[in-house]
Length: 93
Image (cartoon, rainbow, N blue to C red):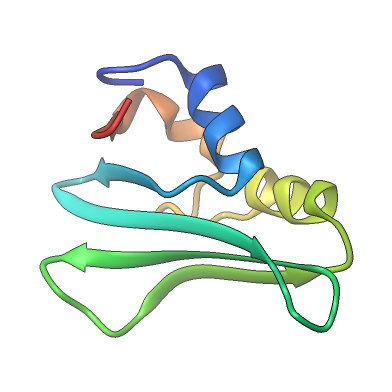
């Protein structure tokens, strides 16, 4: 991980904190929160260049399930987080 520790980054992701990072020159914003009807929502949105598209979104019953889904999802050009973590720059670490 560039400009940060991958385990600290994942702690930020796990807790749902607003987390900004860059992957392949594109800036993303990640956030998570408790849904008003119960459960957990997490999303990663492309912010620069601006886009209406989400990189990834998850709605589950628990924060643990969302976190596991993030770790396992091939959302980074078909790769999982641990496959490409050396290519991610944590902007707000």
